Image (cartoon, rainbow, N blue to C red; front, side, top):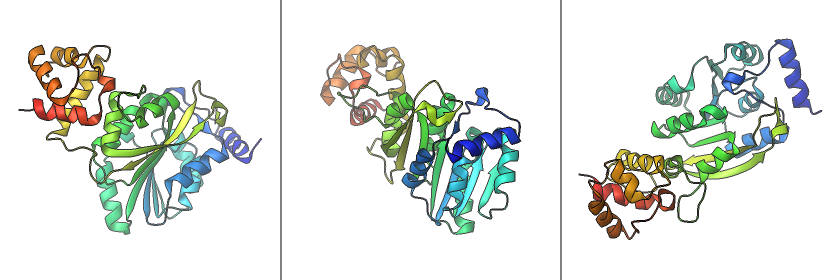
Amino acid sequence: MNELYKETQFILNKYKISANKKLGQNFLINEEVVQNIINSSNITENDLVIEIGPGLGTLTKEILNKAGKLICVELDTKMIKILKDRFSLYKNFELLNQDILKTDLKTIIHNEKKNNNLKTAKIIANLPYYITTPIIMKLLEEKLDLESITVMVQKEVAERLIAVPGPKEKNTGAISYTVLYYASSQKIMEVDKESFIPAPEVQSEVIKLDIRKDPIVKVKKPEYMFKIIKFAFMQRRKTILNSLTNANIFKNKEEGIKILEEIGLSENVRAENLSIEDFAKIADLNFV
């Protein structure tokens, strides 16, 4: 038994609590994984770090020793008491009992950087599997002033997040294009089930998203491109021609064939075979 496992069990016993299944809680007990997350985040005293769902504070403790300021956003009130007891004496610690999806991160980041002379903001999280996609979409689509997002998520989801869309990539989903548009991504490490208590049913993976200064493609109206991508993947077994015609993106099949031919795409091509540049061209050619 490692020290982190013993510490975790001690805290759970002390506060007479267990993991909340509804909130997707699994407590990390692998010290190597903790260090890999911290090291890959490259935290410095010039950083504001926002930790989503700190739980018992396993990552929190390590972040506090490196960051200029740490703001933890935790929904579970049981965890709030534990976190306050453990870390309230740290001057660089702040705790918000909020739902991350309803938290005004843009204002928080702006005010912290301005008032505390912090240069960069970073997100670190061990994300609940059931809510990973909405959180990642929020962090990217709100165009926050972030340098990076380092998260641990379900392996299957991680591989979809960091997949680079194109003809040879099989793990692509609509969110793959959103991530690629806003960030460059990398896999940090795989994490087995035994790294948690209770052990989840699936493997996990730590990934890092480095936010781009400029999007990877230029497109007249990004929102329209993402709308097209969404409709294309809602009917991913159909051809692009059929799915976008059904969604009224193309007025009719004849117009769709004309646009696809202009880009150099077959009328039989499917969504997962298109690059983000292809979708940008469809959006620009079809946008009025």
